[in-house]
Length: 186
Image (cartoon, rainbow, N blue to C red):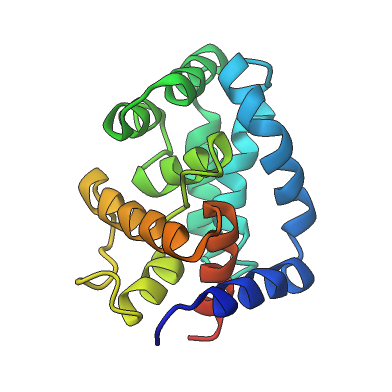
């Protein structure tokens, strides 16, 4: 498969029409970046990102594992969560951003990438097996999806996403939507 601009645009449009979580995601994309950067958010806003990461699969992720991870996140102190998200939103380097977020219980690189997507949807794409596999199948990544991506593996994924977005003149949020839909077809 070769990713083309028309394929990306069509799949991203299909996402809007077909994905049931799109309306709330779009609201989050519109409000969370500034809320996270300025500290104008509550714990439930941060918790929503964690829930979104697992629940967007609509049952494909085992519910007991999903609940356990969400419950682990809920154990974080509210103030600690707030500080970590604000710090990540205002950090410059990817390592700092992911590192700050993964200090929180229930947050690994994958969930941190979801936070980054809602912190800065123009520059970040949430990583998971579905989106990674589309890039792998398209020859944009050299290795299949790792069980639990490291920061460096996420950086390779993100670099591939940014290169594709730049090449085809789309933003990362559009690319994410396209990858998710194209992954649905696999």
